Image (cartoon, rainbow, N blue to C red):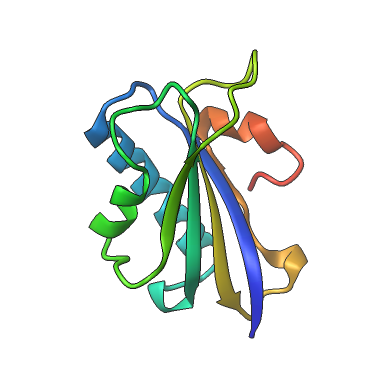
Length: 120
């Protein structure tokens, strides 16, 4: 088993806690499914949110999905002029048999424009 990093992002329609939980849950679920991962494969997860998101911590969505024994952390993304608004990014460290080139990075909806080179 190798340790791999999986990236992902999702853009929210609005800054509301329940909407954030729904969209971040969708992102986490997609990352796990597209990489054939379970909660047992997770080592840690980092979340960042753009400075215009204040309603809740993205990690709450992971806890609601039952990811309760994995270290999670949230941070604020850099405030860059012209950057896409209302974006939550994810960096998950996982144990997997996938080769680095086989890892599916997940960018949902409009967030796919952030990394056209690796978005699946």
